[in-house]
Length: 317
Image (cartoon, rainbow, N blue to C red; front, side):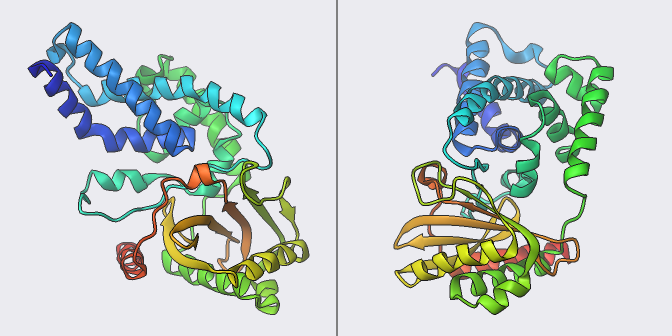
């Protein structure tokens, strides 16, 4: 590797977590995000081989532009895949995996919006979603976004306005305190997987919706299940399967306390709950069982996961 390429690679590595976070929120897929980052790295180092990068005064902005444009191109392929997808499609869950490489930069990876919000973002156009993510999640100004997506600031403001109106109409800006979320999540999981129908009926909202994404590769319904009674019957089946050896770990998924089910050492499902505004009941349940979307999920020690959650609660207190 030449000195020029080696220097370019280090610059890319320094910004990789930011790029990962932005692209993941645009695509909702860990696998596609990794592919896009590889494409962005090839574009960046290819330029370094052709000419010096000294003329690029803001490498961070340049890399974000490369990554976002590769992500927008990738959206077309994702849309084509979804046209033939079996059953409901959910974003690929992103687990907050603690590790020895934890750092301030690494926390950018957990700046992803909730799984429920990612579902809403799927209804935006690719450009609207990119603008929303850059502006609302990462705080980029309209003028900065204009340079990233090669549009005028006026066009970006219009895209941002449409995206905000659409998102806020479907999902009010409310987020329960982490401790409330954790308590509600544990109550729900204990009732649902413990077969306590009475407790389950109390915590489920009357109009609760359960979305199960198996992709035709794992047990899952072909349509969302709506209503408390139907949802309770669905979870009775999960309770029966737990008796066959499913193990529960509470983990943070897309920034929220959630449940990850394991069959032995293999991930069986990721369950993410969305709460009503008062935080008292579960309004939506998102269950990912597609093994392709769980390929990066690893089993971790329960104590470590609990400690990580407690630390997050202290940050929000």
